[in-house]
Length: 493
Image (cartoon, rainbow, N blue to C red; front, side, top):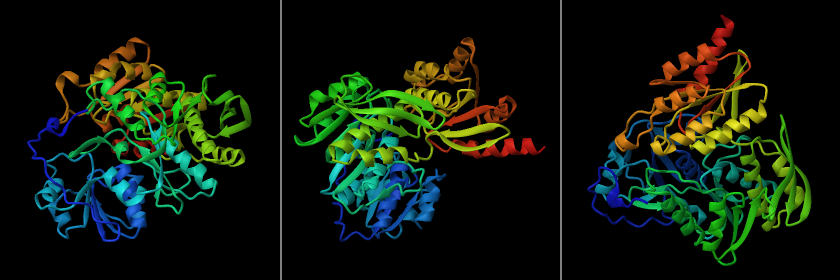
């Protein structure tokens, strides 16, 4: 993993940060990059705790922008030193900030109190609670959301933070009244001044690892470097802790050798202690028989599609059973889970075209999302629309993965990523190369420089009965709503 001295455009001196104020002395908090999923969730926690909260972000878009507005949190759409004129007691620096970010540099030069997002979360909210951390390359947000839902159904009232918006309008973060804190544990780095993975801050008592597959090629130098981060994470668990590992993923299973905690494998194979069998799917989701060891706990229903989502439910089941949550409560909670926004979320249907929004950006997540949509709508053509927006998703190392993922779609429309300051020419994704290889496989594929061009081609291509599956970890220039509006106007005309 990259060190501070390897950070792009940095001749930054190593600086000593003032200590974080105690919760009792803290009054005002400012978050740089407040509309990021994790940062926005942290902002709502601070607001709920009664602190004065504000922030800045040039990428304010729904659903997080709406969530912050509903909390009464003031968000500046520009980064400026004027935002820090009142000198907040604490500045939380998002990990998208470079050392030369105008606000981050001003705070550093004026010795203001700064922290990373995970450091602030641990210091002010996790503290001495029993921390249950959900880690893994894929499925963290869905799994954490489902875990929160199960605990709430069990009337445990945990503190929690989820990097997304839950489908039933449950807040994405809460301080809770119990001794538990449930948190999504991201392996990305913490801040420009702290290159440790976020999950290293969270003091886990129990944990889930859903998967370990090379990602974040912008900060991890190799697959081995990436695995090392997870090995370091599971070493944090105490000997009386509990670790649920995906038994269907060989790399994840090998983490068992690096922890003192009790280990439980979950999955679909006979070697897993918590496993699903006799899975049946229909338009309403999946039903399955849940086993713990060799004992059947009955048939359960999950109102979500895709094997990956059922795997996430098994991970949650392993934790819930270990915590003594009743089988009846677990069954009721799984069956009533409303999902989260931006995960196979149906935004609407116009002119016979269903428009779906999803956060997928890693090739494996893209492929799983396409498969889940095919499972949900077997009679419809799945048209994949993708924006490689994240630093990692634009790397050449993932080209083959995307080619395989989009080969399962009925068609693929891809936006060409712009070249950024931290991109490297010899490691930059060739979108047109992917398109040409897809076409040679008989898949209709198209790439465009702009969203306007992409939208125009989509409107010519889409027909009644299609599913427009839009995937991005960003706002994608609001292509979802624009597509629905244009389809509606076509239907009227």
